[in-house]
Length: 290
Ligand code: HEC
Ligand code: HEC
Image 1: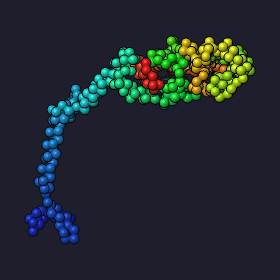
Image 2: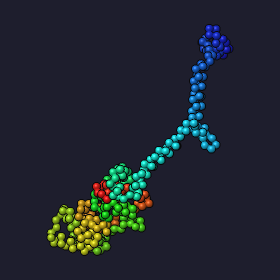
Image 3: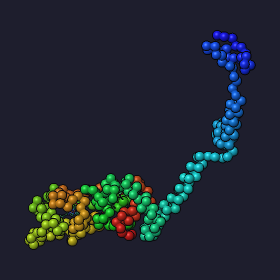
Image 4: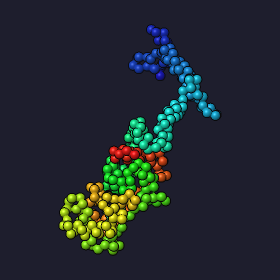
């Protein structure tokens, strides 16, 4: 390695490195770099003074500007809660007809309802509340237990054949399995119910026999006219809505084996306000008023 020496043209010292006769000058770092580093340092100092920075024993230095992301988040949560509280308080206490008449409240019901229904009810009743086999259409079918909004709210609260102490209780008896009716009688009734839908016509005699069977065995729950009774929760058997199915063999199955659908109770799982909101939502889907 060559010795450090002074370059004869520039007067600078060399580094002592030499490549094929070319020597490297030992040029100092330019002053501009020092100015740059100084600016960075100054910025860092000013920033730590203005913004939350140094940790301490009991917290941290909060900065002179008082900038605080936690505070900002807390503030926006408080504002959102206040906006919600306005309508959730009203939903909790006001009468259904007052609420239903208020477009602002129904706006909330229509925007919040679908998610609440989707999360809790759609698995059984379908996204559009139109029902699935075994689960009734609650958007259009006449309500077995009554369709005014107070009644709907009570059904949602206690459920049907549920574990709630106040549950609604309804049971379609197993007329065949429990030998209350013979096979021919069950067939006659099944034919009769199909004929009520206009899909089959019976002779006067057949109709007479079935009507007697119906009056003796079914009318107590389904009503003399077979249109259902809210007192027993037995459905209308004359319309086009069927929980289990309106074809002859499914009807026969219903009469032979009985049915006892279970609607869970929602008290304790949904807040009273959420139950009231859903009741208004279902009412609104049905296009009815309280
Ligand atoms: C696990 C399935 C299931 C879930 C979840 C469910 N339901 Fe039901 N629901 C039923 C069944 C089954 C019936 C009919 C019971 C019967 O056959 O008597 C019913 C009946 C009803 C009725 C009464 C219908 C009538 O004709 O009177 C209403 C109202 C109702 N459900 C609303 C809801 C709402 C609102 C939710 C969501 C909070 C919901 N259901 C969630 C199964 C369910
Ligand atoms: C003790 C009351 C009771 C009696 C008596 C009764 N039912 Fe029912 N029935 C019900 C109830 C409640 C339901 C609804 C069951 C459910 O949803 O799980 C029902 C449901 C049905 C269904 C199914 C409806 C559907 O939408 O799929 C048919 C069909 C039916 N009943 C026919 C009859 C016939 C026919 C008789 C007479 C032989 C009769 N029921 C007697 C209470 C009764």
